[in-house]
Image 1 (cartoon, rainbow, N blue to C red):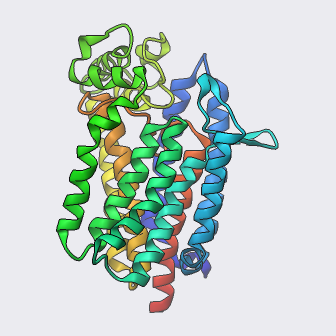
Image 2 (tube, rainbow, N blue to C red; image 1 turned 90 degrees about the horizontal axis):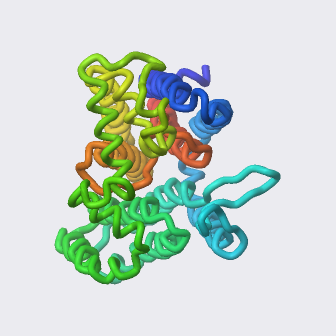
Length: 358
C-alpha cells in the first residue's frame, strides 16, 4: 500500500498543529477579519495536497533539478522589483489570475534543494573559493528580498547559507571567519536601514523608547501573554485582540492570542508539540541513507526551528521584532505552501528510505 511508507507520527503532528492553528486563527479573526480564516482554510487544504503529493515524489529528482527550481524562483523575485508594487511601497507579491503570492517564501525550499545537491556532489567545503561560491547562491536573493524590503526573510536566506556552511566545511575557521565578517558589516548595514527598522532595534534595547509607536506592538504582546496567566482566559475570550489592542494578531503576534486564551499551560503544550515536530525531523535526518536526504531534512528542520524561535522570542521581547510567521498558526498563503512543500520533501526522504529497506 502506498500510504505504508508515510511517517504517521509526523503526519499526525502536522494535522494536529494545523487544527490548533485554525482554531486560534478563528478566534483571532472573529468580528474583524473573518475572511482571513476561510482563506487560510483553503490555503491549508492546498498545502496538504501539495505536501502529500511531494511525499510520493522521489526527492532525488527534486534535488537533481534544483538549479532550475532555484533559477525560476530567483527570476520571480526579480519580477517583484520590476513589475509589482504592494502596500506602502513594498514589492513582495506577484499577482496571477487574481491570486497574489510571495516568491521569497519559495526561495527557502529552493535553496535547501540547491545546497543539498551542491554539497552532496562536492562533498565538503575546503577553501575560500568554495565558501564564496556557496555564499553567492544566498547573497543574491537575500539582497533582492532586502530591497523589497523584507529583512526578516532576507535574514532567513542568509541563515540557510551559514547552516550549510557549518554542516559541510572542512575547517571551522572558514565558518567562524565568515560569521565574523558578517557581524562586522552590521555598522554598514545600519546605514541602509529605513527609519522604522532602526526604531524597531532601538525599541528592543528599550521598550519604553517609543511606547505609542514602534514599541507599542511589543508592549501589547507582553500584556497579552501576561493576561493569560496559568490557565488562560478561555477560547474566544481573549480581550487584547478582540478589543484591537494587539496589532497584527493574525500574523506576527498570533502566538499572543494563543497565550492569552490558553495561558502558560497552553503555550507549554504548543511548544512541546513543536519540539516533537523538530525531534521527528531530526530522527528522519539520521535515518536518511544518503547525503542528499540528510542535507535536505536538516535544512527544513532548521528553517522550522528558526521561525518558531524567532516568532516566540520576539513576542517575549528577547529579540527585536521581526516579521517571521509562526508555522501552522500565522495567516499567509505563500508561507503555508512553502512550509507544507518542505514537509512533503521530508516525508519523501522518509518514505523512499522505507521503500529501499523493504
